[in-house]
Image 1 (cartoon, rainbow, N blue to C red):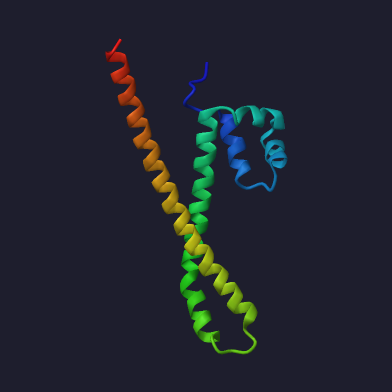
Image 2 (cartoon, one colour):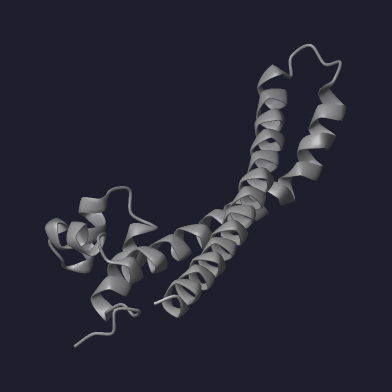
Length: 135
């Protein structure tokens, strides 16, 4: 029987496809599973944890790539600050800067949420200990 804290090789395979394929159906097809199986797996904590971890890695890499473009975006803005035909280039630079900033905000918020969840788990454990001692 599979440990509830681990995932199967098939689950790992579908997660790998989920992060690169445009649809769940396509990912399931490539992984050789029925979409209904995927939906059942989404009810398993271990599967969801690994899937979220994979998505977070992709997201963090994307944010890092965006952040690496910010220097060029600022240069573009500086170059085209007073240019009459640079609206498309300036808009692209603004988008890069905006997405990089939002990426940092999102990562910061995720870190804060994770910390709060850990604190809540500690509180729950302490409450259970106290509750167990009072019986």
